[in-house]
Image (cartoon, rainbow, N blue to C red; front, side):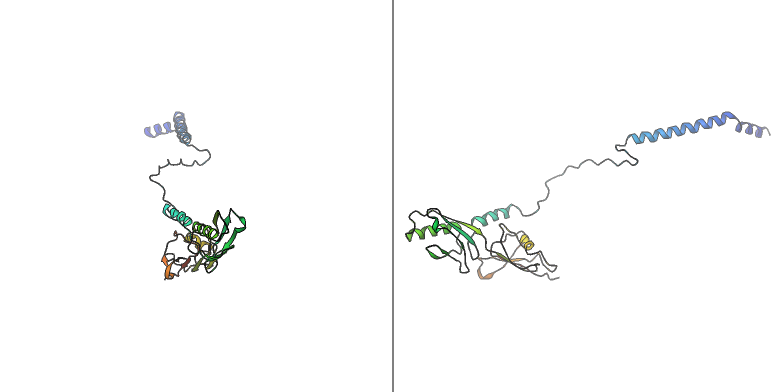
Length: 233
């Protein structure tokens, strides 16, 4: 009875109730303070804060090169300077000393042009510089010009050909420094059966119509025949 009366008196005491309320109020205040402190560290506003972006990692070395290297570029320039005329090429002859001898010509299937006052001249395998010297010599020896000043320029290249597993096989106008992959694109792209590993080219001036294996970065020359074979599997 003594213990029970003491317990009942303690539970009913107003001081205990007040102390409990104070305890819970302080605990709630502490929790709110911790929450607000955490929010103040965030760098973005709104309900959800996004994480900070990681620091940028420095790149080591150089990025890989895409496309052909400098070697094919040098090869392209060499192709332009040493270009040899052939059937289908169109040229312009300008005679500065007497414009009546000037004219535009297309190299015919026999590899000749019909130069003014000179008749047929074989030009296959000649560069434009070679043809300039030939015309000067012919006009001078024929007595038409005493001081021939002549320039020859290439107006357009002879077409190239592409056959095999492409969407539109045939002949196409040549573009300067054309590569195999670009030639395939001009022809509409590969078919589903195409083999990219065994592409060949037959060069315009090759002997015995021989073909050589090439890659997609290989330069195509005017008059060449590109063959895209069918893959085995």
